[in-house]
Length: 201
Length: 201
Image 1 (tube, one colour):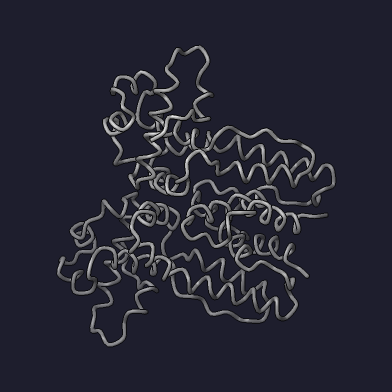
Image 2: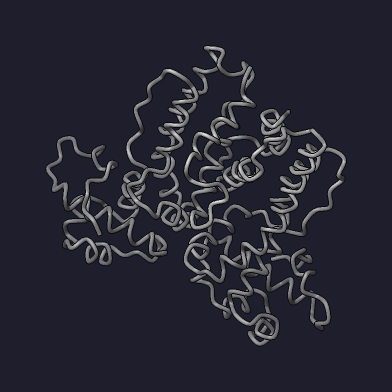
């Protein structure tokens, strides 16, 4: 387990004294447990504390319950919403697709898979998950809408469908990362180019 | 729980005397447990037997272990590989996308989500899952290759990427079926048309 800073946690900093290293170790521990194939239901605060090398009290001081901790771990996994150059729709979409699977945790697909049952079962976790991914999707929608305005994209483009066409294949290729159907190298560029070919005016 | 015949089970029939109604009840029981949010790890043969209203021996007579039973349930969920008209690439792809999420179990997304952790953790289940979905994907590849040959599709089309562009958005929209980003009605047609717009010669 490493203790490099994780991006998601910065969002919670204001006004709250905390130990960034301990927080990072805790979030890493959650992601490690998920990537070992443990479901959310199977993960205990005790197990997280043991793996992070902290006491349970350290966890409970920062997170009210396991659900809140899991959601912060997902945010850390996703990384920060990336800065966009704003020069071309193509470049911005490639940046977003690449950022969608940051390299902060190499078992991204496995972690996501292990979250799935809980997302379907627990409305609180689903709401927290949506709160993490919606700002990222809204940035992508913004890029597509801007492209429609500037004429780079067709005026009658279905923004939500196009969003699914960018996010879905990336997710699927990531889930089965051990045997990706399309090589990782150059995947974001190839996907964006294929989607944009159909989205041209 | 209903006991309507499930499509997947037909594949196993040859030469083996069986009780089709009991088999169907057992497969339905597995899918019901998964759709209640139970992971594969949490499901016991005892629970399946109780839900199906059969004895454990009836299950073990047909399936060597839980993994084999789960894979047959997935096959039942997927339904048979559909017959294609073979007249246009567009019509065949729409047929395949619609069939990909058959109406045999209304909790398709939830069942798939609950399988995910096990797919990532258990090579035997992953291999069984791939054996169920690969013939379906191969049919889709065949439609795309035929389209390239007839000139309906671009000669330099990336078949694997196009496959991901058809399957990924459909999967994503299905997983979050409670709040689909794009309405179900007409989804297959809209997706296929959007993908084909970029795949035209």
